[in-house]
Length: 373
Image 1 (cartoon, rainbow, N blue to C red):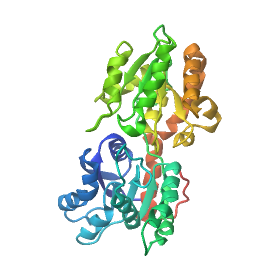
Image 2: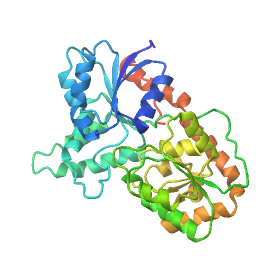
Image 3: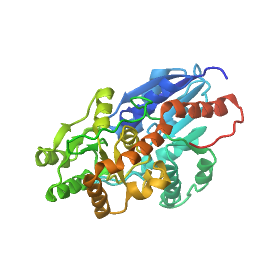
Image 4: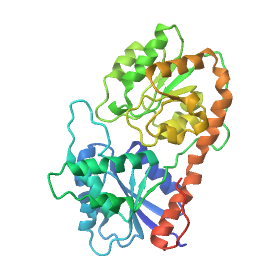
């Protein structure tokens, strides 16, 4: 198949959205050109990014295909296209039907309808996990039922017919097997998630408080990306855990970020919302032992044979697992290597050909047998 020219539209170029766009464009066999907007004011991006991109691009028929993330109002964009519009693929990192609301926030139903019309407008829809797809399809009928009349229930089947699951690729520091060094320093706990309410940092810091109360020594690296509004728990934690903190704040350089992950011993998630979990996959790939909720996307990305050692059902269960690790960290070395090796399946070198195959089917017309990643 010929090398295709793909236009990638990303209204929120930051975090997992940025990782996905740059990783795919660098790893695909096709020529993917990125058109992006800074990662801020997500609601205004959803409302107005289509107007920015349509003006920026001019004619789009110079491209063989268009890819966009879920934040773009694709129906608005396509309605404004001059000339022939090439096939469009949309990638759902998250959706506004199932995304949790911050304290005091009320749902703006229009963003849910934007997700729906974007999905209907796309020629192919990709979700980043089966967990995410199922939550979207499960919420869709209830969302439509809130309409007082003329409910378009037909959209459920219309979307379901063209949707697929394809995990995002991840970038790692190397292809080599992870090195796990036993030393005399206290284990290093990694937080590399976004500093936002849906990651429930208060619950994470509660567990650390319990470790302190039990006299358990540890080191703490608070990594992860910040946006306009930072949960107050982080500034409180900066004071409370000052003797334990070895890194506080986002690390810009990817190499430095990976070095922190390599130094890490444990990565903990207390998330309320997670549709895939790139930060966890990165940490585990670089040798961290994960302790994750037994819900969301985590049972999907962690091999079933390790669920009992990795996944927890309550705060007490999490604390029990963490304390067990601290009592004998070297006992987990073999498991950490096994989990690291398994996360290698998400490397862009392995995932990019699957995305290229989606374009081959959509644009090339070849009927290639597909297996969801």
